[in-house]
Length: 138
Image (cartoon, rainbow, N blue to C red; front, side):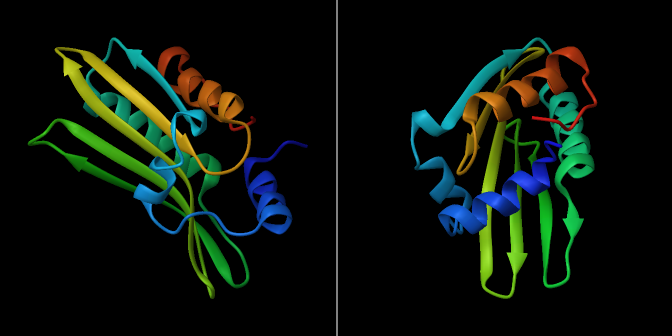
């Protein structure tokens, strides 16, 4: 079974820790990013992605939790969603999704991924926004 949480946990065990900050994930560069645009209002895109990310990734474990955090900035018409493991050894950030208005009902979405297949996670994100997909499978 390809459960995103299982993939994250296995990736941690195999490759170590991810960056601790959102900016650290962003600075991993364009090879670790997936971008697309949507003909939708940025607030609707933000709500769609936040709801799906919480459904798919947020969970608790014995000593740690996968936390989905969202911040919406009305003044600059943008938002950021992150997926991170919070545990006894600190915070490891795995995904940062930047959402910004580029025009009226036009939104740019950029997913930054510290682990796993950028294409798989990016395509899943795109399907949530553009096709209304409710699946969590990568």
